[in-house]
Length: 181
Image 1 (cartoon, rainbow, N blue to C red):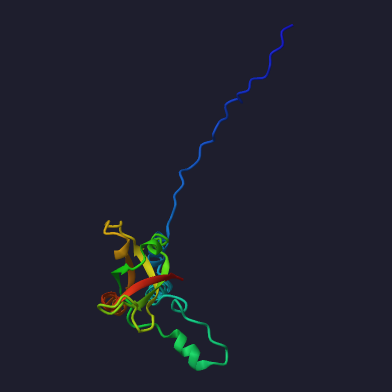
Image 2 (image 1 turned 120 degrees about the vertical axis):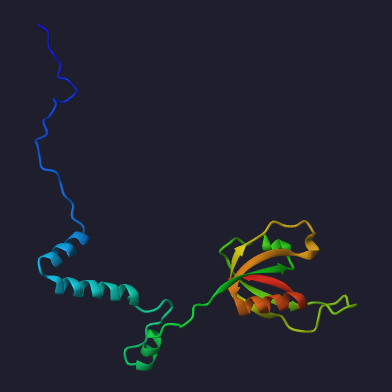
């Protein structure tokens, strides 16, 4: 008596014949509606979709929701800024090279200008430190050029054009430092 063990491979199955599938997209539905004489609803839907795409939906980015009774603030929140702020890349030499090694692209920093020492004086200047750029984004940190730690290190910041001008002026007359935000 020999006993046959069941095979681990299942018996072949037969796939019944079927019609091919035809997938119809939204473009075909619009054409079919126009062909069948339902052009008015199709046209209205197409116009509404185009208007929503152009106008955008929701409040502008950065808008704050106003309390329900404050109509003036609610009207101001709906107003979109007319011109987007254009950012430029501003190279800035920071006095402390070791601080720059802590930064990474994408970090937010405040740039602080401390008055440099007057000519011929070993002591610091008399003016107070001031913030030149608040919340500037670090775009790039170039490799050190090997000029030594006394010359600082270069950082490229992404800031508005007016802030880039202020940074360039402060870099000539002051020593610049950064504080991470």
